[in-house]
Image (cartoon, rainbow, N blue to C red; front, top):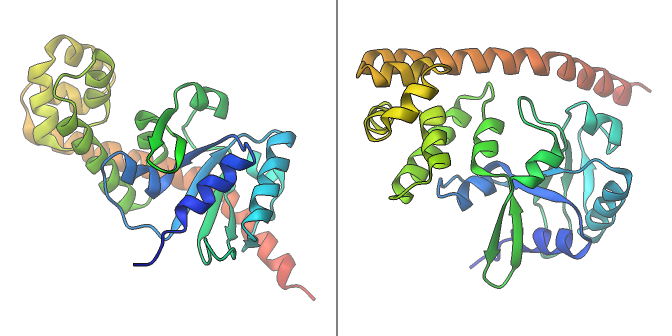
Length: 249
């Protein structure tokens, strides 16, 4: 059996005390929504000290930057992702993606306060984006991310038989499976009425209007996809400029 390169990356980051939160596909797996992923994604604190520690960890992984932009604080703080390829024998070929600013998601300090810390047998503690923050980070223009949000909600709903009020609110705000949202509105009527003030899909669920739920969910997705396209348009233009500069003699 081929050994996973993920533990080497995690242990190296931990060894260098890098303030990071696991996100992306690997985080989805930990929350019970399986996804095949060839890379590992982190949200990092963009302070100078932390980025120095991150650079040391990446050097330990024999990781080289790939594509653009370069590994610079300014690019991270504008919302770019910086990509690396690890060449250490225990993590060879793994792509490591680093971001510090995510569209529609709170700053790192707030994410850190809400983080989920998991104990992985044989690997120690691992800090992960909280489930609500992970869901928010997945609201992109990519169709596959919306399928993942749906599976994350389904996994959470199936797992928590006696949920907290906070978790019930999360479901009412974020469930994307119509049948489950309708059921959730029946289970938690007072909270559903409160959330319905801000979410059309939940309002339709309160009214037992399944076609309305489906229509509102589709409208939510379309709106967020357009917001994501608008957010990334200037960043992509900047990347194109960097690529042209790199190709210039």
